[in-house]
Image (cartoon, rainbow, N blue to C red):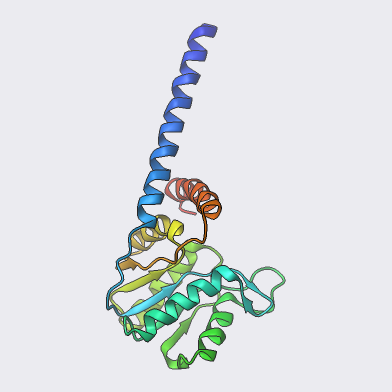
Length: 193
């Protein structure tokens, strides 16, 4: 193959990759704006970090949104997801349970799972809890830019999930999370992780 042909092939490949990246990013932004909040069986809160027994600001925003949905009567039960990170004393889901209990959510309205470490694991464990308790549908609570991937994973696991996103705070965070979601979505679609 000539040098010119190699350069042309690389240019076409780069153009295809840029187009694909742009198309996925546009879909991430489109899904970020979809809110399908409705009355449903259970609310699933996707895990986020906890800081020595206190929800991180990202996790607290998700918990507050789930609390509001619960209080407004959208679902009678909440599933909190997330295990313990390496060296952590507390699991994300247990920190979330304690946080919601302090806000008045009764313990019998909360299910937790403490083994997951990734979004797909969060949802796999949520599907198990839903099946055990006979829940047919869920509101999916996470940040807006996480929704495209989370909804795809939920669908792939057989969860009838409807997004109820938490708004990302500012433009800088939107760009950061939107860009990250392109790559994590591609990794999930290619490798299931």
